[in-house]
Amino acid sequence: MTGPTNEAETVLRLDGITKRFGALTANGEVSLDLKRGEILALLGENGAGKTTLMNILFGHYVADEGQVLVGTGRTGLHELEPGSPHAALEAGIGMVHQHFTLAENLSALDNIVLGTEKLSSLTSAHAAARKKLKDLIERSGLNVPLDARISQLSVGEKQRVEILKALYRDARVLVLDEPTAVLTPQESDTLFGTLNKLAKDGLGIIFISHKLAEVMASSHRVAVLRAGRKVADLPTAECDLRKLAELMVGHEIVETVRDAGSPGAPLYVLDKVSAGHGRDALHEIDLTLRAGEILGIAGVSGNGQTMLARVISGLVTPVSGSISLAGQNETHANARKMIESGLARIPEDRHRDGIVGAMSVSENLAIETIRHPENQRFGLLRFRAMLEKARQLIEAYDIRCQGEDSQARLLSGGNIQKIVLARTLEPEPTVVLAAQPSRGLDVGATSDVHKRLLAARERGAGVILISEDLDELMRLSDRIAVIHRGHLSEAEETETLDRGTLGLRMAGHGGEEAA
Image (cartoon, rainbow, N blue to C red; front, side):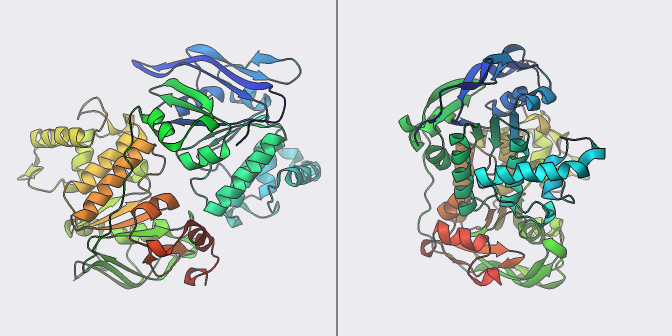
């Protein structure tokens, strides 16, 4: 991708940013420039300092050293007031978060205008807002039904509303955090086409991503953070996927490869299962998982994946249909019974459902097998045994923490996921439910997750992989089914599918799931 065609004017400069949290240096003398009309990709491992750097940019944190400079195009660069989100917005810095910050019960127009006018003048402001937004939509191609409620919009449309919010406030710099995490391939292509158009109109863009292929295809320049320091800043044209991966983690990444498998007998079966209600409902789901296979479930966020995972885990009892695990009827089994029957889960939200943040690493590692004789005897917990087991797992899974007594909430997302993986896979379960197992993880942590899921498959376990990442699904799955609006398509051999076909089905175009 060629560089910015506009005059090389600096619109943002981070100069020697250092931020410490106690003994931890989250950012160490990080300097970064962004030009007008440039798309800059910001990469780094989980815990590399990307989020801290962006929080300093938006005034949520104050740097211990260094400064943030913004350019107006008329008076050159000037220092941004530290610790002031309002000052960042006034300076033309906009942010689109991975998890959208929209009021679901308000219209797209209301969400865009909200915060720019006094509440008493919202109605009168709408006419002027419509006129300005019409021009923005025509120039950017960000088509959105302005009068539709946010709850009625697709994921891609919600993201466009977020971008329009920033453009409406005359943003000169736009930062996007994992912008394609919940988009179909077609929506991702549309998004980057739009971003390229906005850059040509002079917008400076920073996007944070763990998807190296989209970084290579859609950025002009790449900056890499590792352990809080900038280790690379170079044109994308001088990079390749292997080089970027090595820059991020500091060593070579060995790509995971799925060998041809020989699936065995059915292990886990859903037969005409319906559950939930409203938008989260499942409708007569049929699913068969065999021993020694990974069954992938593809779908855009909000199409029933969460309810499906809860049913499989025993957290929700179906209203109709039946469930069997290893030949036993488990239709009315609760989560504890499912674990005892050999099912283990990697939950979608590792922070909310994967750990108890105030508990220690060792306690979190033992929490689902707390009644096992190795963890208690005569109703008393065996803390020494729990600590010893935790030390073994910390080493085996490379959980980076201050020790087995560390509070789990203090760990990075990647290390929290390692706790969940160790707790899930160490007992060698019969069935593994992996819901969004690599969401938000860097390339190194993702590679480790993939290796461990493939290892479970190799020893004969069945793995249900629910993911919105088609590259992950295509790489790991033996068969893939698509979930759309609570309906699940028949699973097909991965070799017979391609990304384009899956993307269309995820959006509801073609196949049984579109019914």
